[in-house]
View 1 (cartoon, rainbow, N blue to C red):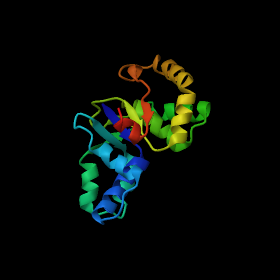
View 2 (spheres, rainbow, N blue to C red):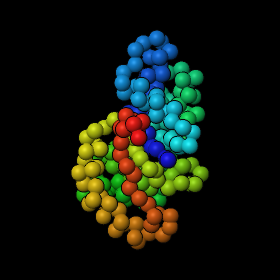
View 3 (cartoon, rainbow, N blue to C red):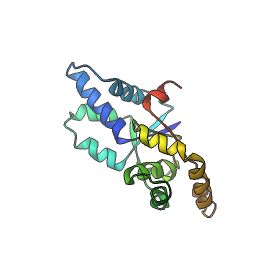
View 4 (cartoon, rainbow, N blue to C red):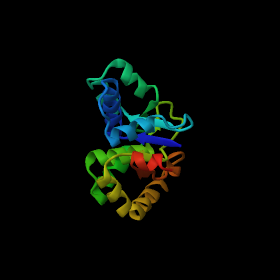
Length: 171
């Protein structure tokens, strides 16, 4: 399984690790975010370039950042990702950042271009999840129409699932 972690999940895991080292109590979200990082190694974890850049600017020790970066890989935009993000914004009213994350989860790739898309986008953003599943069939139809005109591997792109860390951990 391949998962794209949005910035809220990465931020919560970083803050949770910092709190753990300082002997502070962790929130449920922080515990879940850290647990996602500890998923079986067969699960590939990714984060966007923007999320990686934010992580590097956090007031967290280099060693704690390495715990996260050793477990996650960069997931980068590829061809058609911007077009798909624009369509998600225009037709379904997703916020710019949410559309970017959804499009990246659908048409992004690891840095070596060995995979296209992920199985799930993991986020704490319940509003994003609800909007996605409210319009899921229309979004899927729109993606099929767009990818039907494209060459492989883009013609085989599929929508990811959206889930919270707690939902991923309970499956």
